[in-house]
Image (cartoon, rainbow, N blue to C red; front, top):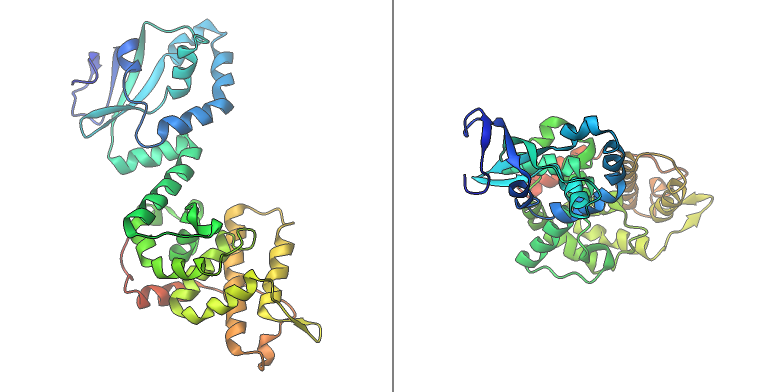
Length: 317
């Protein structure tokens, strides 16, 4: 083991979990993580370092404070925990221990990513955005709108492909994490079309962007609906609203709702899909003019979209 000199090891190297007593300086020099783990752990530390400073006042907890976890991935070691304490040890706000009790976990990359995104929640968001931007570059996609060019589209893609944001999906879905590269390639035409109308980020929240991706995959001509929505071109007739005005009023009213972000966005997507159903009937149809905009089940639309794009049955989409 080139990166970690093991002493007092309990179990063999090939065991999935084992404990070691490790010199502090040897542990200190290990990589702080993969990807953006270090940066986001430091941001997360600002919220939690007070906990460690408080615990340090009780000397009987020294052994607990000097216990850390390390991941073994493809023969290399990376810190899992201890990142917050590392910063405090560097600043000499915590006394440096001579040695640490290290629990080593042998992990696949996917398991490590899931663990880190749970321990350091900021990490998942930033990693998703960075992955999206890298994918844009690989696919030669260049967007001008503020809504798309920064890469904040992962949750909209989750809703468009799975019917729910990642946080609300069941464990079976999460075992087959969406491959963001594949997903962006699947929706590249729709993303390009949406970008042409310069969508207002205040209007095109996650749920509405999800509906746009889904609906434009099925009927590209409905870009006219989203264009009018973006320009606030709704109409009212005989105390009824057209599908554009109906959704604009929903957007305004839902700003005042105290509901969880995930469910809020799913509801917005469902109402947007219902508005487009009314839009497709035409202004001469009585169903076009609405007293109240309700939700619709858009799972059949997801199945239709996957059939059109020939991705039905692909587990990571």
